[in-house]
Image (spheres, rainbow, N blue to C red):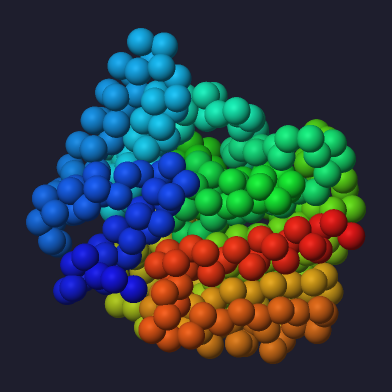
Amino acid sequence: MWHFFPENYMWSYQIVRMISQSYFGGGEVNEILDAASRMKLGDLESFHHEWMRIGNKSLSTANDAMDKGNKETARSGYLRAANYFRTAEFFLQPDDERKLPTYLKGVESFRKGGELLATPPKAINIPFEHAVLPGYYFEAPGQSKGPLMIMFGGLDSTAEELYYGPAQLLNQRGISLLALDGPGQGGALRIHHIHSRHDYDTAGTAAYEWAVENLDVDPERIGVMAVSMGGYMAARCAAFEPRFKACAIWGAVYDYNDVWAKRPDNHPLAKILQHIFGVEDMPAARAMLQHYNLRGVAEKIQMPTYIVHGEDDRQNTVDNAYNVYNDLTGPRWLKIIPTSSPGSSHCQVDNITETYEMYDWLKEQLSR
């Protein structure tokens, strides 16, 4: 993976992540590089400020275009702004008074942009325990009683972010997408205070049953997928909800406790981890992590399962993919992008085209 900041992997990863999403309307490469060039490495205020700066600039462009009736330009501006605001919120601490307003500003921008798409996504809320799981239904046009993928993000993802790639790539293949903020994610956490849980299949089942009851989809052609930490979530859903037709794991997680065992308590994502768990310190978070593994779980998955993973993944090392694959007892596919190849980093942000085979595989599985 190319490092904009040679001394800092985490910051460089966020830059490459944004560039990857820019191909799907989530930014403009030169705006991203300009913002990065103005940042003071290691200064989180600088990180937040620069993303807010270009977010507000894009939002102003969008609003001006709307005032003039130029909906195409407005759409582009709103969708870029939404992803810039999402990134601006990324490293804000849970107790920072700017965190929720920044998140909501991104959601509002995304919805304004989404309304201007040829097929606007439908904002939805799935009842779950004491509240709801928010998300979006991205319908593939002309697919009455067609296939559907239910998708969760990762540790830090939001349902809005899943438009910049997955929604478009699935829709192009005639597959609708139900993109969700599951427990510990996006609005489920920030608005409804639903924390993460190791039995993520409860959310998967709730989503499946809601989709069958409320969407014009074929109940026999619904799959589940997730990205990054979501690799654990998707596998857990597939293991305990046999009605799913297929499972796609975009970045495997076999033992999330083991992933964090290699990270110090002051890791840049430590506060985010505590936030999603609803705990006050890392010892409490580490106690919860002990339940986040697929031992005795992966072998329960009977549906066709596809895993894609990079050999240079520095967040969830490649052994996670091998361990999940080897425990599977049903039909299984494994794609490893070899070291030093574009796409070999975490979740292929350094070459998103390496995931296209996964979407082709889903098209084949859900057409049967």
